[in-house]
Length: 340
Image (cartoon, rainbow, N blue to C red):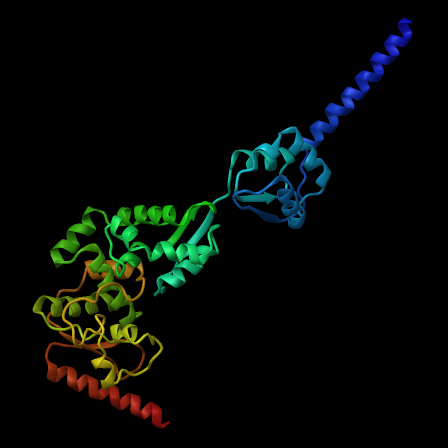
């Protein structure tokens, strides 16, 4: 009888050991193939939907061992939405616990210094967070929300400074904007605010002017001088007469020549017929262009015109007569180019 009991005990011990070993392997053995993938789980994802997504991702060596680990951790009771990185060497336990406790992998949103519209911003954001572009656009066009942050609908785009930001895929559109507003506030430190005040502009107005300067020249060393021209005109009450604002007003940034009829268009962005700055930025300017405005070159120039070398650089003038000579030289160069 004792032998039988001993035999049964040994068998049970072996079975228990196998069970523990199997459970250990299911939890702690690496179960991801080579390469890296990302698992996207929207809010409300069910356990079956999770397993379908895991299978479609096709990164696990053994799907059955993952299911065992998921059941052991009772994952079906707590599936957190998010973006989860699945990479080589990860164990089932690491994957399961990431989902169970919502240990998301951040995503990166890059805002470039050439975005003109809220629609474009919404499109960029929708590729990086869980909300669709229409939902995001509704937030970007929410006047009350803009007002709560200290902006108008026209200046709202000022918040979005060019940079790369880390956020979670599940962030709401409003919280995303609030997060970017925090970065905006960090950029506008006391030194920059003081410089803006000395010019006589608000931070948002500085960005509006920078947006014009950025469209006038890609030469960084010219931008402080161009900013100085516009600031001189602002201080003297002279219309800016900035061609980029006309292109924005007629919604044709690709147009090569501004015609007389364009200068008469009835738009608050027409800086030929309206004094002062337009209502808001015409493009998101680069950070260095914003600083070019804040650190503008002090001079007496009131005009500038593209050089006849047609390399994108400019000649600057104090008087209208000098500017007219520069303009004629440029027009001759254009005419010669078209006659070739």
